[in-house]
Length: 252
Image 1 (tube, rainbow, N blue to C red):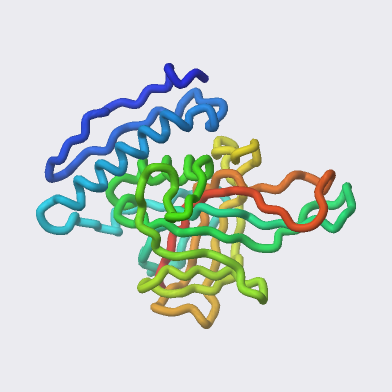
Image 2: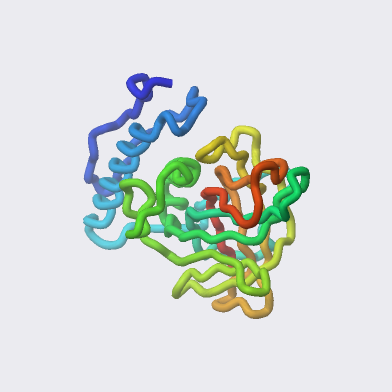
């Protein structure tokens, strides 16, 4: 698809008490890589909107009870009574290794990601959050921890411990080592990775006893890219696959 036909509406940036977000038409895009220039413009508009919110008189209202986490068949909901604490867009790599046999399947050995705080965005402008998450995989994560031209605040990091435990550090919101509880395939319409990789599954992760600040579970949703090739053909040893996703953190 030619970039000249890629339409972004609402180019004017308003600074009203309740600013509206520019819309981004992602329909009819066969290859997200071909839309990077237009998406960059969109991120700039989002950055302008974030700046407008920051200059509003008083703090913007952020009612997390209005946030609706994306769902997919087969993935259980949060435990009854759970409260949403934090929402982040994760941008990083899924890590794999191959044992040298061309016919073997790559083995997952963890992940590393920077987490960007989109908590209030998820509550106020969910359609923007989903688009940021889906397109983040197609932007490099630069040395300043920025995804594309938009400056989103870093809320923490995701990695696996030496013991292979998924771990999330979201600063003042707490730390949550966890274990997989449930998994569901990403929708067929999910965004592919930078070289055509399928989206990794959506997950529900439950906290272990060492979690802090009352954090109880984490959901990985709205994934983009990250899946390994079907076999280890032409690969030996460790390798990485770029991905992005939304992470929703819930307290007990």
